Length: 220
Ligand code: C5P
Image 1 (cartoon, helix red, strand yellow):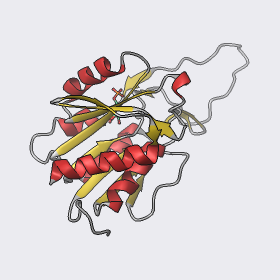
Image 2 (cartoon, protein in one colour):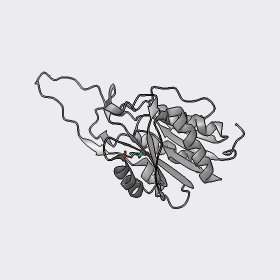
Image 3 (cartoon, protein in one colour):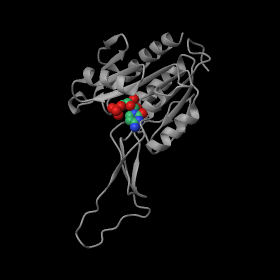
Image 4 (cartoon, rainbow, N blue to C red):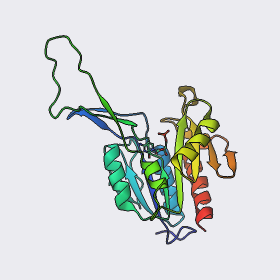
């Protein structure tokens, strides 16, 4: 473990998309690459933290020097997060599917020749961030959520912070024209109880380093 301001601290990071099965060979997913969560885990590691990195099927590899827990679904991610606690801080950068397929098939679905398309039914997934943020006993001292929005970013993210019960929300604009999802850069606004702080557009690695510093400051 590196020497740094987070030496002796345990920090959890969730990252990547989740995959929600439709049948054994098909799934519902999203465009999250896992890049921001991965960069954050590396930056926290570099400040000396022991990092547990719970990741869905991301398109970038997990960073070295952290404990990696690989999951597929939102429900698996929640279980892995609960198993990783207690931690000093928890950062939820994963793009968790809000819904899973309630009538997922146990065998590969086949065309039956009738020309009728199958109907998918959905069930709500657990909100992992809200679950941890609203824990009584055992809640991490600092709980940080992300908010990927496509409009009214600060207003929506501020409301989300209150609704979920987390300490900070890191809001970013993921509208297609922003190029953030899958891209190397991010432009974020950090919202805490005191207000909103907008950072200039910068590389995801730099966003991660600044966030890690801010987290170290909060835990000091
Ligand atoms: O509500 P929304 O999905 O926009 O909230 C985003 C934040 O909540 C992110 O920090 C994300 O990791 C977290 N989240 C979660 N579990 C869910 C949905 C979102 O942890 N089921």
